[in-house]
Image (cartoon, rainbow, N blue to C red; front, side, top):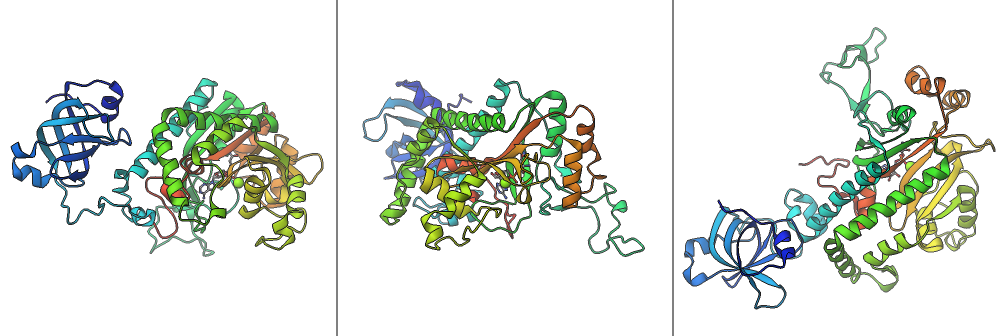
Length: 478
Ligand code: 4AD
Ligand code: MG
């Protein structure tokens, strides 16, 4: 078997007049003569020129959209326009047929909604090929960023006993026969008889365990799947999503914000370098999509410009309290255009408020800090004002919250007091509290929602389109 060359390598080689073997899937077949072949290594198709007069008609009939082929032939400078080279086929082998009557991906434009229903095949479209190559790069770049800085990649557990965010949105994990759940004398579910001897759930965040690692290894990060049973059917939420969670000993909130800004810029720059062609394609896709919209709803910057803008500018940093002042005085608040009006200090910001700050007021990424303690988690470090905690959220244009993090409460008495106030069991989190008992120190960390990052870099608008097989309420297909 002759060696197969990937199309990307072949196009980048700049070579012509050589014999090659390529393998891939047929995108289109025109005039019984021109095959557009794609193997996923690049957005570009390779044109195969078929000598149809000397090709077995039975083979020609089987060259249909979706079929898998192995093609050997001569790589030549192309005579046609639209491509620099093509392959003059000398032999074509059909590796897998694809019935053109039944193949769901016809060579025409399909809606993203339709493609979501055939997520097992959507990788074969130009849009999804580009998205998942960019996703891959962002993932690789994340590891590179942390590894270059001496962070230790730590695997935190998927099955846990704690609901780290205390929001009650965890999926239960049980081995019970659901038709026959063991009960205690008092009628409660008897978890002692369950697999782990305790009530367990899928992790909502690796943070608490990540903190334990940082209290010895200094700088660690996790990058894994997290699960939330929040019943929010939005374009920004998944029930299963990937989160990047660094945790750093001896970092305060400012160090934390600096690291997050550096990380975001680093991975975006990495993708721009590595996936230029894909991002250009996605930029054009978005321009085409926006042509359907009225002028005022179109973006000022195209995708490429937006990414570049994000690299070239410092993120705006301000406190929650300052943000509330801006929002209170804003036109949509005064004209009662917000669904949730900002009346005073203390309420949580809704995505309409976050987006106003980022897209209308500052027109760039924003880092909001020092939120009221009531709307944030128990582990955040309490500020001296007695009202706020050293929290930070990073808000991105078109996305809203992309990062959530904080400096952690390292003072045992303050932490215990807050847990008591909120009603979080100190017994269950004995191990977490131990790190405050033995050599506790100032430390900080954050969580970056990986799919929200991919959304931003690809310019897609629905989070279900940037993870291969999205999980959301009433959907776990594939
Ligand atoms: O703000 P969150 O809930 O923070 C935490 O979980 C912290 N324990 C992180 C930490 O400090 N180590 O989530 C962090 C980020 C959000 O900013 C958002 O980008 C993303 O995770 N996220 C989701 N992404 C998709 N679907 C969901 N349901 C998400 N919930 C949060
Ligand atoms: Mg958050």
